[in-house]
Image (tube, rainbow, N blue to C red; front, side):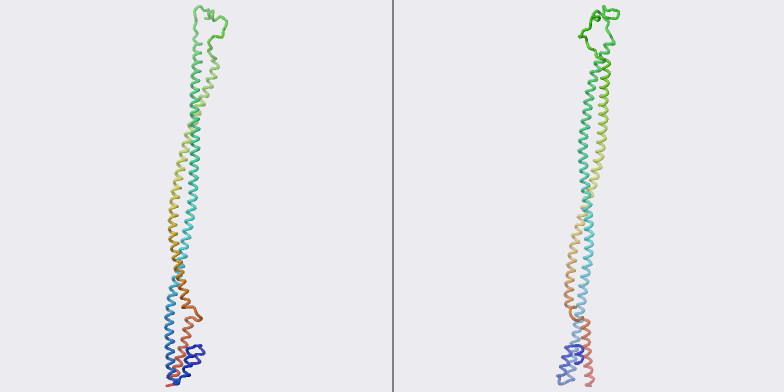
Length: 314
């Protein structure tokens, strides 16, 4: 017994060896003492085995919880990253669309201002041409009335009585004076009337050309305005839809963030539980297996000593 105590460095066997050496009845009391020690060691082994089973079970639960929480954290972080990237892309698209909408509205405003100025100029030009045409027509009417009247008088000459064979009277044969009636230059009249008719034609052409240009410009502007407003409306609708998607993603991110917070708390609890179990079940100079093996050797040594005493006494 003393040898086993020395080899195993067992305080329990050393105490048993000492008690045996001090005992008056070296056989009966020693056997009883050995039986007591074996019972105590076997009870300790059973208790430690139960504790070991508890530790293994609880550590397994804690490790499972930790790993599950870690997996959930990684999944949630991936989903958050994906949603944040989608949100950023949508926000960029909204920014681009918003700038395009602003450019479209600016272009329409500038085109509207130019169209208004162009319309004002064309209207004034047409009015001026109309007024000029009216003035020229009036001038032509006056000139034609004057020159055409003089021409008729010249073509039908009155032949008075008491005239010679050429139809001249004494008065006609008298020297010329400056109180005679002026009938105008028929040759010059043709040039003036011709010039006025050319000017009248220019006014008519100006009216026709500018009226056509105005109609074309108005039509082109109407087409541009329709297309611009349709494009603007489509882009504004796209912005509205994308902003709705952003709002949905933000709701999703809020939920994911809450879930991530809960998962991290769960992992922290699992790690805390593992730390407690390790200090209680794992920490120490010897492992459970080493302690169990050493105890089993103590039990076997005691049983061997008991058997030797039993055989010797018999």
